[in-house]
Amino acid sequence: MSLMDFIKKQFIDVIQWTEDGDGTLAWRFPMSGMEIQNGGQLVVRASQMALFVNEGQVADVFGPGTHRLTTQTLPVLTYLKNWDKLFESPFKSDVYFFSTRQQMDQKWGTPQPITIRDKDFGAVRLRAFGNYSFRIVDPKLFHTEISGTRESYGVSDIEGQLRGLVLQNISDAVASSGIAFLDLAANQMEFAQALSKQLEPEVARLGLQLEGMTVQSVSLPEELQKILDQKIGMGMVGNDMAKFMQYQTAQAIPKFAEGSGGGGGGIAGDAMGLGAGVALGQVLAQNLQAGLHAPAPAAASVAAAVPTLRPDEIIATLEKLGDLKAKGILTAEEFDAKKAELLKKLA
Image (cartoon, rainbow, N blue to C red; front, side, top):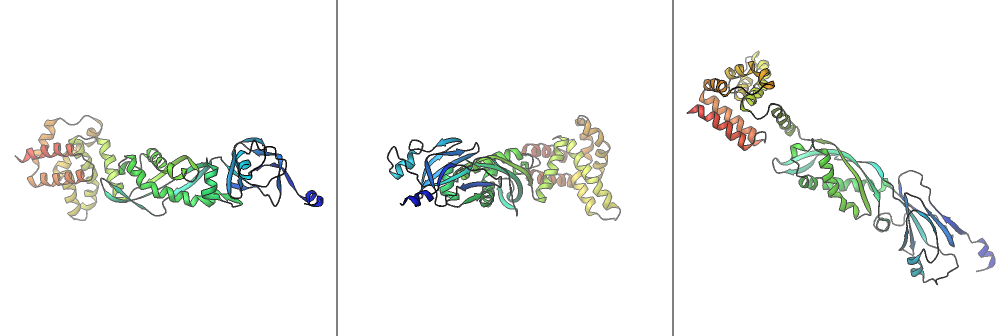
């Protein structure tokens, strides 16, 4: 090399990256034919890591701090280039910076309902959305698997892949959470924790780490939402048989009133089935207010009302109770107790 060429050659004394806040995850320092001066400085800020790559081979990784570049601080690169221990000449190597700060408020959601298998309801369709945050923890892995030799790699380049991983793991997260399907909407924090646990090994393969996961909304199918509303209503009155009949009568009376004006019998029949007859409904409706705020009626008073039921009305009531058991609103023990109580009246 001539003296003039040597003079024209540019040397780098300080290597650093000032992030511009645009969601950049990886950035290659612009060498443009320049060489790094032996003894030069590498400045890595608190939310960064730096990676040296020589001829396609990943070499040394530097964490936050100011580093003087010598054979002692570049052991892997020294080995790759077969330098003497006291090399003095400048050297050339690609330097990549990685942002290790949290990437917040990344959105995920189900554009279309996804099918979930549930032990109680079989195949059901679910919609949900929320957000998550992540950071780079393994720049070597992220460089070799994701960002590569690109000049710049941003959050927008990987968000589609991460969102797909979330959707792909929802079914397994629901299964592993142990949360009943009807209770997902009321247990969003537990659902988010199960989803995060399911995703951790998936994102670790990319050199990333999940820092937070939220489930902000879970939408159940309309028919299951109705069952959930009934379950909530039953929770308000408890499992007492008399209060159960009062609750069902209160639900049926408005429908009966709407249908009675047109002379139709369909709604009236439904009210009879749910409330075990209009006559019983009238008796229970009178005690509804007191029954919801006071101890259950005495067994004698219930027994006095039930004998007025005809056998076909008792059978209709048992069929309705069987439907509630099948839908999960009544347990098997509750159903058996109510069935035994009603069957006594047939003897």
